[in-house]
Length: 312
Image (cartoon, rainbow, N blue to C red):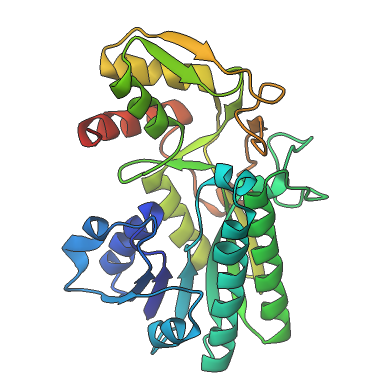
């Protein structure tokens, strides 16, 4: 089979390309390199078809879809916080881009799409761990809204134009090649000032963290096990951890003992749209035979070790 990975030079996309090649797929990658990095796919450049293009340009998509059987749609603006500053970024890169892709898939007759959504679609869930059938879905960030809008578009195209989808709702994915997020931010801040660490919010935000290897395993497992026209899977770890503990782990790995300074944020949240408590119910995938190898703390510590070596 030939797979197109949108956003394939990004953190998750580049790991997915590694795994797809190992499974014998032909792979095409489209990326505009706004957040993706060429060095993440450098070792595979002679094995994949790379289209330096944008999902806002329909001609680029048309070219990228040539001969493809399935699309793994990962391209998006990944920064949740930016929505409060520039809402149009999420609208264009997450919603319009998805519409353009679906239209070109419809015209080319490409029938399968796997989509990386997010736990942010659940908003401030009142049921934790949160199952896939939780509702109503009331996202509190523009990022969450854009992911939910993309889900709705994909579902409607599947039912209207006889397509199939697997939608993955991720917890916080961490690991080598990550380029943003709380671990990355803490290391950057401690590099600048080893004596003090600013922590957004009140430090009691509690969330689930998933190591990248587990994430990719679950994605490929979900594709194999999907039975419905629209199949939705939560992907996360089985525990969760407070932001203050993440600060402790990063500080330990850097050999530092900084003073913590909490910003207080909005009702203890790090920023507008920050979901304070998030843990996903992953029993649907577990009942099919998948489970994560790593817990949140292991995932955070392994990621911190890698990033400390990489970040100047």
